[in-house]
Structure formats: structure tokens, C-alpha cells
Image 1 (cartoon, rainbow, N blue to C red):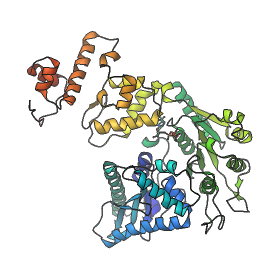
Image 2: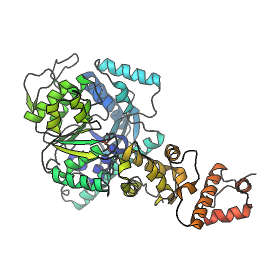
Image 3: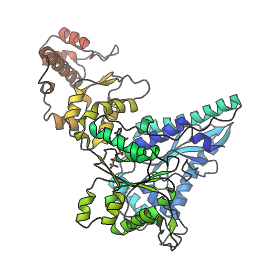
Image 4: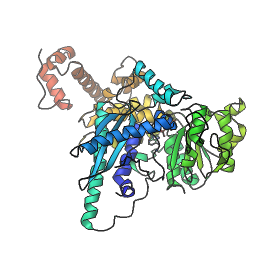
Length: 524
Ligand SMILES: Nc1ncnc2c1ncn2[C@@H]1O[C@H](COP(=O)(O)OP(=O)(O)OP(=O)(O)O)[C@@H](O)[C@H]1O
């Protein structure tokens, strides 16, 4: 079975990206023997979340993780008719979802995503989970933070994920069918995803954003270290990916590690690896992420949270390209481009003695500042359009926001920046059902309350413009909200609004607020 050929199928590349973006999880393949296959990086995929990463640091954790995978495979092997996605819990009670791959009725392995939870954990379950992890990795700390990052998928999202996995399998089968029919060697693999892929696109037309795009083009080709500064959700990781995909290392790994996710010991071991016997439970040598990233790019997020001891080690990698694994005596060599990011002011930290000055100057070779969304509101319309397209589902009619919605978005201060905007648009698309234009009333109460305290009427947004249009907009708004409030009880709403029922029905039709032919008639 030629896994390499499948991993380069455009749909598989796209699905990997979608799963990573939506749920911060990795689409992975295990062959029929349960061996997890490598992606283009030449390395096994990284465990999906910080919690799993911590767990596999311990040999026992790694063994149990493989055991959980094998157990799902046994279910597929035991029932050849089972072709759809199946979920099961792993040793840490995370959910693992897999779909089997059969070629010519032969079981070839499974595509899977692991490290998910189905409901936000209650206190007790969280305590149990943390205790389980501490049993495996006694030095583990900061577990609350790691736990907060574990992706939670409700039933609807689990369904969506299963659909995507099944789609990936059908894509592989379709590819097999076409290549066998043609009886010719498979086409050359397409290039790896670039920043021009729909799910990896940097959008923006504002002055600051155009400057950043220009700078990315310029610096992508160099090997210099880059420091990206900006609030959470402003696109630091996306910019780092764009630098990597545009640069000379695009065919090599892109590795990400958040420095605030682990305590010092674990971060050191994750970054630099450890040797056998370095600490209790280290029964064999383990590669660190710097080695995994060799030849490629390493995105070190929240670099301002690194301890002084690790800052020294990082400086050595940057200056000499060498490091010592935990417990090691022989330095290892790597060639890695480091892109560091932080929301902190490292210059101020240097002044306070919290960040090494020499390291600061070493990583601050090229600096990119990503301004918060509230300082580049001109980008809102294009970003909204981009996210509407990105999260649009097949068969959905949504074409855009109703005109009243944009002023609310423009007035909001966006503390969560582009991530918050993206989540909001995705939410609107889900709530909008089969509406063509998404109304302002569906916008999250959080945003509406911040912008229109106490539910000010829409007229507040229309201080200028033609009076008849403003009156119409208000009338439409009142009827729309009234219909939602009374669950489409037109007699009651007509009474509340002080107009006749027939007049209300005419206005509903005029504004296109009908629920359609199957609309249930209301009781009074
Ligand atoms: N200019 C942009 N165009 C399109 N999407 C964007 C842009 N900037 C950010 N995004 C999207 O917003 C989300 C957050 O971006 P990203 O993770 O890169 O931010 P970040 O600054 O690294 O956040 P954090 O510091 O919290 O890790 C992602 O889904 C990303 O794709």
C-alpha cells in the first residue's frame, strides 16, 4: 500500500488542513499492523494536543497510546462490513475516531484523528485525567492549561469529523479506481500546500496588512530568525506558516510549539529530546522537536514565557546550530529556521531582566508586528467574505451579512481578534440555516451587548441616510425580532405592534420573513 501517494492527494492535503484548523488535531494514518505512518516531514505526526504530547513523553504513555489505536483496529479487522467512522475512548479517555481503508477487500489500515473530548470535562473527570497523567509523567505541571487546549467536539462536530474522514477514504478509493483504469503510473505529486490554499490564506487590504504581505515576500527567502509580535488571534501562526511555505524550506517540516504550554522540564525535553536514563521513566532515547524540525522551520509561540535556563539553550541553537538533549553529553547539530512569536513586549522584559538581552537581539533580526483587528477595521469586509466562503457548507444558501450586521462588527472592539471574528462567522453560518442573508439579530449577544448596550434599536445605527429607508429597516427589524419572540404567532405580534393581522402578513411577505409553506399556523 503506497501511503506516500495518498498523502499527496489534494483532497487529503486539504482535509488535513481543515481538521487542523477547526479542531487543532491531526489526520493520521496507521497501516494494517498499527504502525503510524509518516507525513511529508519524514517524521511520525506529532501527538495532537499538549496533553497527549506529555503522555507520550513517557514510554508507558506511548505504549498505552499504541494499544488504544490497535484496539480500534481490531474492531475494523473483526468486522469487514464495518466501513464507516467509529469512535472509541483511548487510555486517557480522550476520543479517537477512525475509518478503515479497504483496497480490493483487503484491510489496509485506518485514517484517524485522536486526542478529542466530547463534552467539556467536569471537575471530577478533569482531576481523574490529571491524576492519570501524573502517574505517567510525575513531573507534569501546568496541566490545567494543557487541558484547556484539548479540542472539545460536540455530537454535531463529531458527525462533521466522521464525514470528513469518510470523505478522505472515498477520495483514496476514487484515486485508486482512476489510476487502475488508466493503467498508468500515478501523476507527479502536487506541491505541498502553499499560503495560497484556501485554508491558509492571509487576507487583508489595510495599509498595515499590505506592508506585512510585502515583508513576508521579502524575508521568506532568507534563513534569518523572525520575531512576530501581536495580540492573541492576530494571525501570528498563519504568518509563520506563510513564511515557511513561501521560503526555501517549504518541502521540509514546519513544527510548532507553544512555550507557555509546558513547565520547564517538560518543555526542555520536548524541544531538545532526552537520552535513556536522563530521568525516571526515560527508558530510551527520545528525539526533540528541534531534531524533528531539522532542515525546516520551527515556530516557537509565546517565546517570552521561556525560562532563563531554556533561553540559554535556545541561544546556543541559534548561534551554533547545536544543543544537548536532556541527560546527553554529545551535542547534536541541527539546521532550523526559528520564527518566534509573543504577545509580550520583549524589549521591556529585557529592561526588567526577565529576558536575555543577547537572545532578544538574536531573535529580533527581522520583526513583524501584527496590529490588532480594531486597528485595521478596513479589513473586516474582506475577512468576513473570506470566512463566509471558508465555512460555507455544500447546499447552504448564505451569500452574506444583512446590511445592518456590518456596522455592529465595525463598532465592536474584537479582543479575540481574527480568531474571534472567524468563530463568529462560523457560528452565524450554523445559526443562519438556509437563510440567504445573515441577519444582525443572530450575532452573539456578547457582541450586540458591547455595541448596543441594553438592545438599543437599530435606528441608533442609522443616524444618517434616507429617512424612508431607515424607517423601513426599523420596521423590518421589529417584525423580525417580534416573530422570533412570539414564535411566529402573527395574531399576537399584530396586537403587540398595533396593526391588523392582514397588514402584518403583507409586511412579512414584503420583507421576505416567511418561514415558508410548511409554516405552522399559530394558536392564539
Ligand atoms: N490575515 C488573516 N487572514 C485570514 N485568516 C486569518 C488571518 N489572520 C488570522 N487568521 C485566522 O485567525 C485564526 C487565528 O490565527 P493564528 O492562530 O495565526 O493567531 P495567533 O496570533 O497565532 O494566535 P495565538 O497567539 O493565540 O496563538 C486562524 O484560524 C487563522 O487562520
